[in-house]
Image 1 (spheres, rainbow, N blue to C red):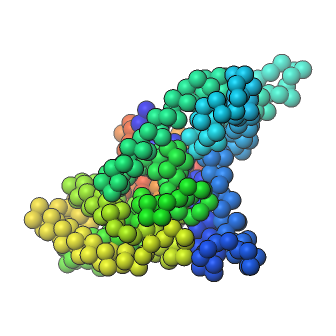
Image 2: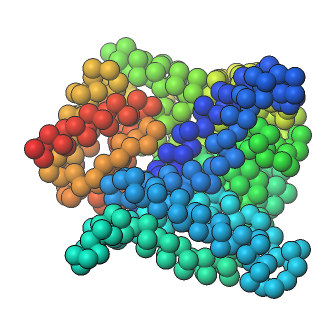
Image 3: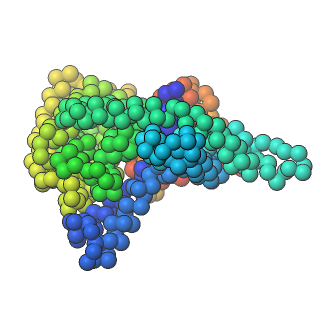
Length: 485
């Protein structure tokens, strides 16, 4: 089950990775015209509408992303099947169709069927498509039906499977919808405390890759909260002073807190290792500050000093809860980095975003002092403080020419091409399935320059590289293909 959820989290990152361009377009539009109406400025209208296209259709993107990510070979047929499943469900469970089946007036149709186009349904459709693809993409047919064999059979069987799903959803979707809305309402009633609890759990779930599932409840339309869409005005129902409360508190941590932790780790490193460690920590800190991608920084101490990571999760919860309690609101399309913070200034639901700077500076000091104190007092083996026999070389950096060497080192660390069953990657991690877990050498993987190594199951290996993981993944795939020729 854990492996399934991790794969699902990885698959969801594909559509989520499309959001940054939305933020750039809409941010520029709101900077030009804070009202966002564009009635007197065609450029503003085009920028905001173009940026809202993907957000308004996140459910469809979730369906396609999940289908591709959960299919065996990420082939395009799975994406086509997801679209077919989505269209089938939207048609068969639309309010008009349910009204016809029940034989009642429109106002008697359960409200859940007005939200059948939610991200949750998109995920379900993606899973249906991926299941059908994985089961039937190699199916054989008699000669006279050969034209429908193999991958061509997948869309056909997906329609049938989607119809069965519609029958099931007809009865259970109203209950699921009510539960999700109830969950959101409970968190909303907790106010700033609920926001802080969410921030704490958000960080705590990162090691197992399940934070994306939690994020979908608060940031998207799963529980009718949709903090991102409402903040940026693409979804109606935003409330000034409330909308954005599940986003704003992450900015002080990602832009300032984690860089403070990086400085503490640098200052407590052994003198002979400071130069090498400093380069890695500086890169990770800048990545967190500008883009909000924190995994390179977090994985630098997550497993070396898990107690520090728990403290980080607690401080994140405090930051999110504190900012939610204050009249400060800011939002993001991708993550809580400097770029998104700057672009959100003129969004109608933004409130005093400049105050995040002094709060962030306080968290910089808090993170620095807490991390330095704990590292020294508890003698934690963070980067630059490891015992000699555990020290990673850390002299290979992903991206550019070094990606080839890093891919080769990782391949050797997992036991060679013959031990790799499948590979994939998300924004920061190379995700591998291996035949024999005993052939995986974590020391070699860390010496490749990776920020961390995760073993979520007996045959799963995740190598944390950072935002330049795509370069390494491309080279790794080439090495696998070369071994097969």
